[in-house]
Image 1 (cartoon, one colour):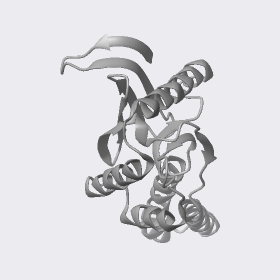
Image 2 (cartoon, rainbow, N blue to C red):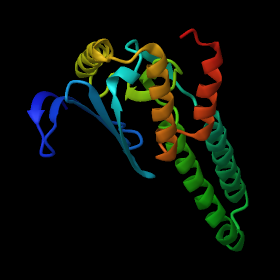
Image 3 (spheres, rainbow, N blue to C red):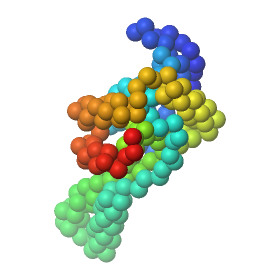
Image 4 (cartoon, one colour):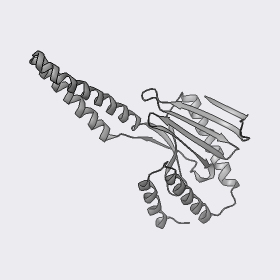
Length: 212
């Protein structure tokens, strides 16, 4: 869904909304641009729901297209699949009733582990377009590429780019103040369990190399 200008119950004005759903994993992502210069990001999955808000001025207006691969879950999927096949072949070659009764539970367990690892691989290996923080380059708004369709996706991305530029132009902070504001916001996102401590520490390491 992608919509313009509507007033919501909490008194803020919603400027644009994009709802995305990963059909392979069931994960949902909802992006709400409101009051011209803020975005609310909500992500729902089997592991729960996370939501946070950002001032658009904290973002770099030029998004980055990225394809991630979770090799750990891919190798896990392959390992469990091979184990399930190996047990299955062994049972097929040794059709003993007592032996089958002992081994079939292991086959079922490895099949379930294979399916679980596959779901995790798909959820951790998205094709995304990311809007990153202006100075530290931390991915903060991650959109599933061309979801729900290319037109709605492209329209939302272009609108978000324009609003980020407008929000940045209207801010009265200098670059040093904006950097402090960004680091402070990243620190809060870590405390809210949105970002990991590792990502935050990597962001801080970039600061000495910046020309502010």
